[in-house]
Amino acid sequence: MKGLWITEYQTPEMKLSCLTKKTLHHEITPFQELAVIDTETFGRMLLLDGVIQTTIKDEFVYHEMISLVALNTHKNPERVLVVGGGDGGTIREIVKHPKVKSATLVEIDGAVVEASKKYLPEIAAGYANPKVEVKIEDGIKHINESKGKYDIIIVDSTDPVGPAEGLFAKDFYQGIYDALKEEGIFVAQTESPYFNEDLIKRTGKDIADIFPIKKLFLSYIPTYPGGMWSFTMGSKKYDPEKVDIDKFPQLETRYYTPEIHKSAFVLPKFVQELIKS
Ligand code: SAM
Image 1 (tube, rainbow, N blue to C red):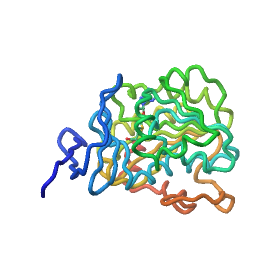
Image 2 (image 1 turned 135 degrees about the vertical axis):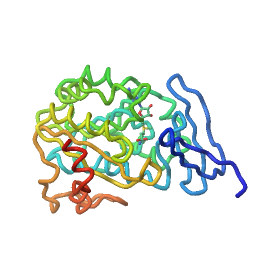
Image 3 (image 1 turned 90 degrees about the vertical axis):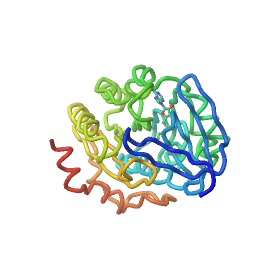
């Protein structure tokens, strides 16, 4: 087939290639190499250091699941923080929830926010909402300076290399615990059960050491390695499986439903064994 292809190394030994239509943007920021590329199969996609972050075709799965499971588990999710998430998709989902009064996004790289507003306006749509506050700074610094402030903290990070490495560390999780209010909930994207077993085991243990409730849940995202993607929740009080789905607010979604909320915690046996070991 004619045309230029973009290839992501999903692991050192496995690649995903997409036929491109056009390179819309490319720059080297102080933190990473940023590109927005229009592709035949997934539409416009954001890449950081050659790694696919989000695409127009499948972004809704990740953004709904990283946000709405926690929002609907908490009884009163008024103050929400996102660490990372500069494309804006997670913030877009958070401001949909009727109980949210403020949504703060702390992103280390302002260029990601600007490029997303310009080239991925459907994903960056939440930035226009008056409840949203954007801070361009290191999420670790912000967490260390926040005590008992948030109802929900969502870590929507890049993979655990470069500036995001510290976002997967145990002392960062302790900082998150301290930055949450008494009934607070924390969610992080914790990568692929097929290719990141050690990370899932380590982060799961660290989160379980700090939070009384720790649960892993899954969703399915074709552009992420292996397709099956994990999120880990640490909760001070509320159990995400003991929710009354009849009390959930009506939200406009494409992936998340009350039934998906419940079924996301039903894990295949190999994933159960992974988090037990
Ligand atoms: N959904 C995506 C995924 O799993 O591939 C992640 C999306 S979002 C673009 C990730 C963001 O985290 C990036 O824009 C990156 O700049 C930001 N980030 C990385 N390290 C950070 C830090 N220490 N503080 C705040 N933001 C950080």
